[in-house]
Image (cartoon, rainbow over all chains, first blue to last red; front, side, top):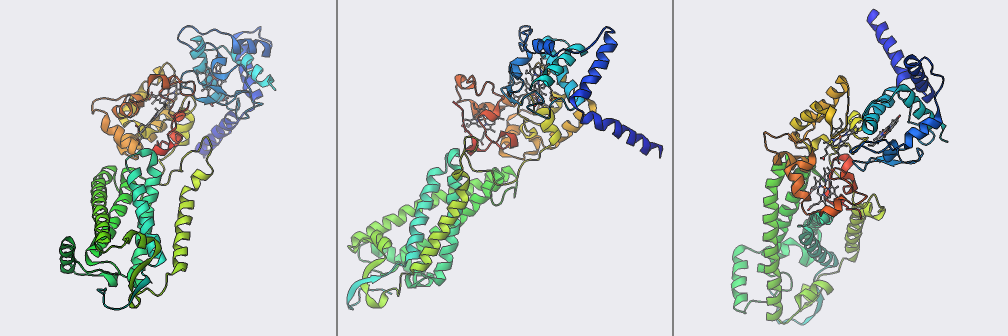
Length: 136
Length: 376
């Protein structure tokens, strides 16, 4: 009985995580950013856009997020190393995007490491997401 | 049966229309199969010709009982001794003339029909075994299929030899009896006594046979009729490789989800063990996901030999090596050795690992010969 209840609770917790709205994921990053920096107020789509196109890659790395995702998040991109097509990042062009917290976190992990050689901060992730969500 | 009696000789019906249609389609199918046999690019045509030969053979067996006079097997079922005697007399140019098939010709015909059966059935077995495709897809292992291929190739060569004998005989007899035997197989008429004439040409049956051939060709090549840039080949017929949604999701976003059948199990173990240095990427998969993916990869790895490519890749990787690149296996390197360096750098290709750029069926792990297309 206890076990079933536990499993049901787990499922209940996992379900919204698997299919969340971009806003819910953004809110989670906001909470994280606030914890890291008590002065945190809000995310900026403007800064997110600058981050998206900024050429920050060290040698041997992808130059920027837009290297693979192109300058326009509504457009399909292409993986810089393998040549594989990448579907658009903006949720307005691809409803699957930013809808799975674990997936978003996984790709921030990989791609930030790819471009910056380090993990992104919650502030950077939130700014970036805000930019993608603002693209219509 | 021997003619040239004293009776009045006139232009009579001999070969009914279905027999003539059979004869020339059979010859054309053999020629097409022979011409397309070596090249992988034309395998669709080769396989089509093979099925056509089998179908025509079935028709001929039926027509050997149901056909008109000179088409019936009973009308040219001679003994070996008769055939041999006829052959010897023909060589010394004093063989009698036959309105229907002569005894030596008859033996060549039966031998060719038997070889057609051997070659077409073994062809279907090769296709089903070595390529894991076609009507008998997956009947046996790839190595068994490769063995049957010896029979298929040997039978086809013997058949070609018999065709040469047959054509030689036709030319010889035509000269000996001053008549054009090949033309009579077109028109159906020969010179002979009215008593030996076939009652009719059976046009209706010929029409039905022609319609059946056309319908089969249409059905078979339909895939080419709605040809599009991404679909320039016939869809794969046969057993599809096992797929895993998790594999396609986790391994198919940065590049093609390389099918596990393209590397041996030990390579996949090495790849997952090194997933934090995955060609400059950090995969960072959790334990459960890793176990699931590795389980699928081990089960369907090249060691299981589920496709021609996987069988040959497994064979080309030395026992103690575990390459983590498909593009470093011996078979892959051999198959792509002829592609110039500049081709790999074309914008639409970019990397050797971009299999889908040239293999339209790479997603399914099939790598069919007909689905190859190097982009410009």
